[in-house]
Length: 265
Image (cartoon, rainbow, N blue to C red; front, side, top):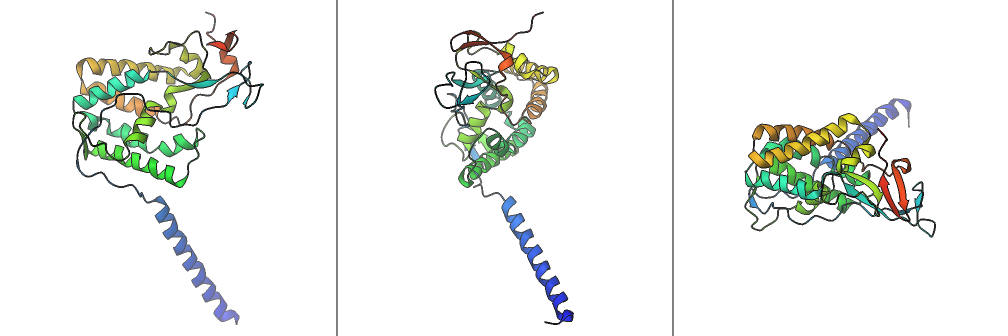
């Protein structure tokens, strides 16, 4: 083939390849979620959803390493900072007052991070799992637009509900990894000592403020308070990883029993 014909042909092939790449890229960003028809659905939360993340390996007694085997005797789990019952009661107060659309900013930002929540917390994000995340993301967009509305707990559930409920229950910013055995676990109360796990004054103040605003909104339903909650939750939801277990942040008080290290005054 002569040089005079090779160059135009090569350019044609390069252009065709670039066009095909653009089509593939476009297709890969399209949502394959099934839209929920405009209407009323059961959007009520009750029992706590199971964790959307895989269980963690046990840790050594000094909490410095994790793994499987006889050297790893300390079971660990993800602990809530704001207890699920408060998150649920706040959410249900929003549902009952018909204010779900007021949290549109949070719903959109929260749903857009589901993929990162899974990937950053050791979920094996296969194509079906990614599709499930996308369905839940679409649901939150529909809630924010008012396409999906609450109907006082009457079926059906909308598509994407279980994944939304799971991630709302287990938001990474609201979780820290720690030993199962603790003598300072507050149960269903606020985890005050988590401030020493988070170790960031601005973030901790935001968590305190969003908790207080949730309680305030539950009392009076003030939409201005809800606007503050919307922005605070949106900011907090930008964290995609559960707070890790750092051995220096814990004190061993008995075999397989620990407490959060509280700095001396």
